Structure formats: C-alpha cells, structure tokens
Length: 181
Image (cartoon, rainbow, N blue to C red; front, side, top):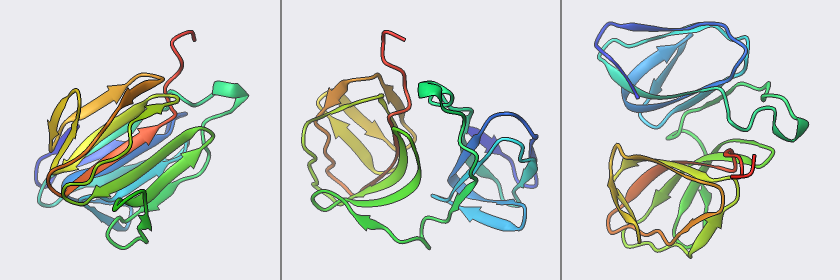
C-alpha cells in the first residue's frame, strides 16, 4: 500500500517487470487518465510514467509477478486499464458480480462484489489466492477481514467464504507456485 499526500507524485520508472496498481482510496492521474477508487492499471514491462494526485490517494501496488516465467512463459506484454465503475460487470456464482481485470495462463485478477448475506461454496485455490478487502468485511472459517485487509493463501489452500454486508474485494488467483517449486 502506498499513500500519496495531496499534490505528490510517484514515478513509475521504466523496467523489465509488470506493475499493477489498484486505486484503494482517493483519485490520481496516470498519463492523461484520472483513476478513482476501484480503478486498475497494469503496465507491461518498458512502460514509464508518473502517478499524480491533487487531493491524495492510497494505491495498492504490485511489482512483477510470481507467475511470470513459469511454465516456460514470459511476463505479460499487454497493458490494461479498467475503470471499474464504467466497465461491464459480469454475473458470478449466486449473487456475486465480477469485473475481470486481467488473465494470463492460470493467473486471474478481478474485482468481486458480494451482496449482503452471500455465501460461496467451499473451494480450493490452485496456484493460491490473494485478496484485498476494498469495502465491507470478508469472512471465512478462519476469521473476519475488514476493509484494508490483505491476505495471501498458498497453493491448494481452501476456505468457505461469506459476507454479512455488501463487500467488494480485489482477488488474484493462480499466481503462486506450488510448495514443491
């Protein structure tokens, strides 16, 4: 998590790795595009730019990818920009709504909106799972995770998640190596 005070800049230097940025709170500009809470940017290797905020913001930043280079592959070469509230959300299981952000190989990244009192089936995660709670409280048999909680679960971890109030999460799956690698 990176907090930028009002009027600050965050250089995003050109490099050989991908950079994923989710706007957690506030708003900031990248190039000529203003990104607000819930918006997502994935920049391919070689991109250079600067994040600028007038009123301050908090960014969730991921540099590189544990998945990159696995299975003989190379890091993704595409850049992605998703403005969450302008995009088309897809129906998910039960009452969930899903906004795909990026997919490559076994790796999938999305925003998932859970309506109040939604329960999901018990399941395992091939390649692990990473969750950031953007709004509400995410719950499973292991605990309660309020807004701002980041968690990472290993390859083949399992849980039975649910929510009591409307909850929005960032979720990334399939990007963590198995234990034997």
